[in-house]
Image: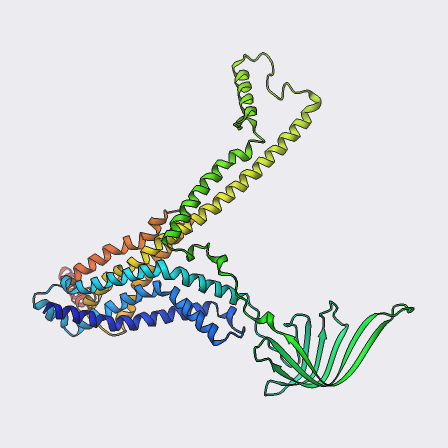
Length: 485
């Protein structure tokens, strides 16, 4: 009996889980394209490039879509069972809600383990390829679009204007082309009455097949003349002008340049990098003495520093019957030079300390980012279990299936979890909280709520029942009316 129930609950959960997971993933991917639409539109991206970007970004958004899919499917599964009185029948048979949730909890723990492996091994590679591709697409040139009646300067070294353009998009008339490849703007000119734009099969070149036109080219100064230049004019019946479109291609950047970012590392790489950064921060603090020692001999560890410290000790221990300071013993004609040298040394030391402080600040901020990413590998995986513990009892309490009420409640709880997570991450980035505390704060705050919901669902709580609130209101109203009488 129990094994059949275990199989029943798992089957009831898998269907909604698959649907909600892919719907959530699709919404998140569309949100990504909506953010970067202005930078990607109009660049002539092919279907293969768009499909590649879709797949890579879908992989990077799986850790965020998985918890929401689990939360929504858990509410739908237990809500459907509560709506059809299946939970009542199971409880009447002596099976508790905790026992009924056990197979699904084991299944979610298994999913959470797979999510951790996915975060640790697949996500770094997907981030590397997706972010490098996004960088190349954002920095690529827009697709060539030559409009009638307007000069187009997209092709480097040329300024092109066409008077008319037929509906076929190829036939053009009244063509003017300024050739500036020699470094001058008006020395080469091409005029043609009509022509045809023919793109090459490999899309690396664009051919203008011009008819009935003239070519003008202005040369250098003629010998024996003052200020006059030579000009060559040539008529052609048909001439092919080839334009190089290689600058419009998406040039891929070497992915090795992005491998040092924290998003592209797994746990072991993050651990090694964090240790290295801790050592580097300590070294940078120790190097301040080395930077200042040429200007402050008293802190130098060499013979000069020891000699200065011993002299200072003698001066402090000797009774002062006169001005025994260094400045007091300096000759008057050298005091201005001493003040000038001391001021220059103070400015240099101030610049060195400011640079060292900025370097340490940058190192500390980077260290926070790597520590946050290390904890993120665990928090996103544990969020699957946490949100299941929230969704399953919620579904049993509200007793509503479908995509109406469960969707609304799931989005509300997911937003609460997400806002707390983002807030904790921002506090960790700023150094207000340690990385582990900021990244786990959402779990610490929502776990007691999840356990409370499990307890309420086990006791058949009706906190989401409209009739329950109506009865409570009537009791308070009757009490109030009785006291008034």
